[in-house]
Amino acid sequence: MIKKGTLELINNTPLLVLDKIVADKVIYAKADYLQPGGSVKDRAAYQLVKDAYERGDLKKGQPVVEMTSGNMGAGMAVVCKQFGNPFYAVMSEGNSIERRKALKALGAEIILTKQVNGTMGMVTGDDIKHAGDVAREYAKEINAFYADQFNSPSCLTAHYNTTGPEIWEDLPEVEAFVSIVGSGGTFMGTSKFLREQNPAIKCIAVEPENTAILKTGKVKSAKHIIQGTGYGFVPPHWEDGLADEIITVSDDEVREMTVRLSEEQGLYVGYSSGANIAATIKFLEKNSSIKYIATILCDTGYKYSDL
Ligand SMILES: Cc1ncc(COP(=O)(O)O)c(C=O)c1O
Image (tube, rainbow, N blue to C red; front, side, top):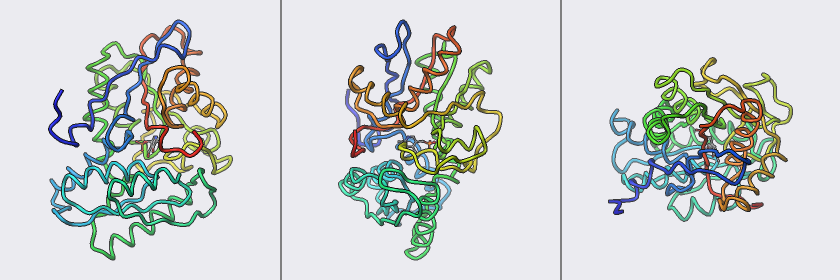
């Protein structure tokens, strides 16, 4: 299969049958970690840049700035390179060293920001708010386009236009969809599309137990291991009513499942993938009649220091 360029490696990921994780059942998981930036966020990055060009907000050669946990940054670095825009990633120093290395290798300029109340490998909502403030200021200073993943509708459009239709085409029998929430683009865009095709499809959002703001309205502790998600604030585009259920997962459950995915299924993926599968299993335990359930393997294990 010939692909005509790097951008053709974004979207259209395989829907993988996981057959080793639950006895007598399979889970369908989109292998989004196979995209060139190594994560699901390539979809949002591509859509965001295309939309900005279409609106005339971004011109060839103009710098682009984004606040990132590393994954959106890697996606933006890949996409900006193809479109001819220099890319600047503003990232909390609490995100893994592996993420810095990947961003640098992909040609991004990295600006690291201090942690406010997180620790290495555990980046909090305050940490990313601070990174966002620095990014916004820097974008102004150098007359760059600020991508703003949390507020950009393109991050939802990406999944409404691609992830949703891809699942629907590969698995029209789908009865439930499970996704962890960072900016919420993956959960909301995909759920919206699937619901429009079949209103009976159950849409399940996933949160770290410590920052279950959507489920409980409270943050127990700002820290957890699932980088890129669970920042303890309600994402700006969040729509009540889209999630049939919100499932929380603890760090221990996530770590155990992430290790099982590599050891038992041969998939070296990151913590949010483990979180999605752990939550999928919790849902199946209470809904044993469900046969067709889809979720996302969000990023690669190579982005973590302790996997
Ligand atoms: C590893 C990982 N998983 C999941 C997500 C969540 O994706 P979304 O922002 O679409 O909610 C992110 C977001 O950055 C991420 O980095």
